[in-house]
Amino acid sequence: MGKDDTGREWARHWRYPHLPRLDLLRAHYVRHTFPRHAHDGYVIAAVTGGIEEIGMPGGTLRAGPGSVVLINPEVPHTARAGEPGGWAYSTLYPSRELITEVAAELGTLRGTPGFTAEMVLDARGAKLITEVHRAAEAGNALAADTLLRAVVARMLGRHAAPLPARAVSRAGASDAERARAVLEERMAGPPSLEQLAAELGTSPFALLRAFRERYGMPPHTWLTDARVRRARRLLDAGGAPAEVAVTVGFTDQPHLNRHFTRIVGVPPGAYRRGRTA
Image (tube, rainbow, N blue to C red; front, side, top):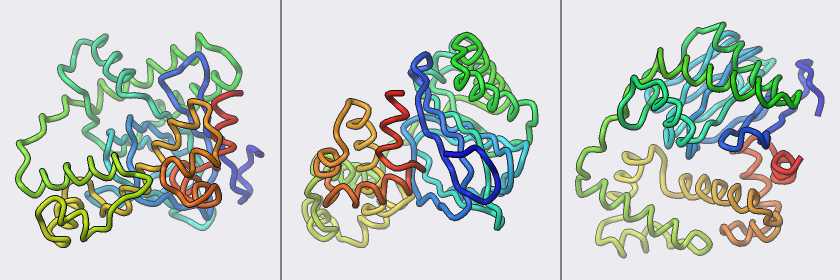
């Protein structure tokens, strides 16, 4: 994969062994679009070229160079190019544990931290993010870890607050949570919407409405995202893509490849190599 911005797409999604609680993605996308999906952990992304359009629950953001995009766990979002030349960015995907640890060290946030801004103009912060990537790619563990903690501390100190406690679930939200549990348990052979609603004692349209409200996407979209997330964990554990595809409920490896590439940004094979390099 080349590292140029001439209109050719490239991407590297990987994990640096000395920063095991962090995923890294550096890419230039032109035609690629990310469908609605969410992450287990946080997103801290610096746009370094072009324009990225991010579809968030509250509207669409347009992020250009010097912008830092901040997304909390489980927040559904999309991404695509905001201009014909696409966009380039350097992204950090820190785990919840890493963010919570840094927040505790800072001593200024109680509870689980969450970002209060979705996008900020912060040229210095964006530069720090790219420097984390540069240090990791150079194999400089001390610099990479130091810079990572500096970035996280900067973002938490300026743009974070304790995440509010979840409100007591209403009936519809409770149905959505039960539906999610069923889909997670029966991922390889999920029921239809009608069957799922009947099992939960509700109607298909009521369940669809409640699920959208609770998770920001319909059940079938959520299920595809959940399958890809589980596939990532199985690949991390050394699973072969063909076996992983069937385990998580895709019909075959090409089916996994298509959805995995759309959501993660690289094919399963490249993702696997990025964990073992």
